Image (cartoon, rainbow, N blue to C red):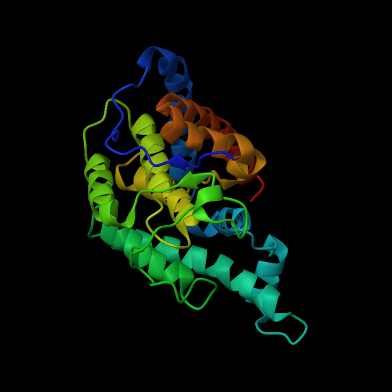
Length: 282
């Protein structure tokens, strides 16, 4: 029987970043991001014209967690409203997608007056799970008991990964929040670490994956890497799900932060190319 990988206590933030390996990736990724943001700025009413990408991200990020709603079904539901032909299960899936979008824009509104912080995350969590699966799991509140990740129905002994213990969760989230506001040598590397650490902490019983992915455009928007919170990476994570999870595991198992950071920078550059191509269609 394999022993579950345990959260990397007292090893955050990382001190073993190999900058020599990252520099060849950071230049092209930063250049691609600058070109993308230039295009974004040039689009009048970009939030309206690129709204299909916002909905698509909500669909893809939710699908990673098991929902089965397609973008077409979500748009049809919004246009036509309730229908007796829609099953309750499908309606629940669509509601999860719509909640993701609502949570995202609620967080953006909060960022007008607040930094990206625990309050923003908690309030986004409340909106994300309101009225859907997980709605009884302390909306906006951190878990008070252990949580683990593994195959459906497994116990903690058979899990793949055990996040930070509940009694150290507040401490872990405080360190995470402090790191967001540090003057890091490179913002994309900092973002990769922020995302990976949030997923490792797993502060809530449900919604952690979606919130962790949501923090990507929120962080980029708040610090000025992009002029609008429109940078979506769930499609790449979905296509490379096994590798993505393995590299997250490697952080706690092997103290290999480079695996996650290196992958994130490569994915960001790749996703920017895809977003730019899709943007030209609208």
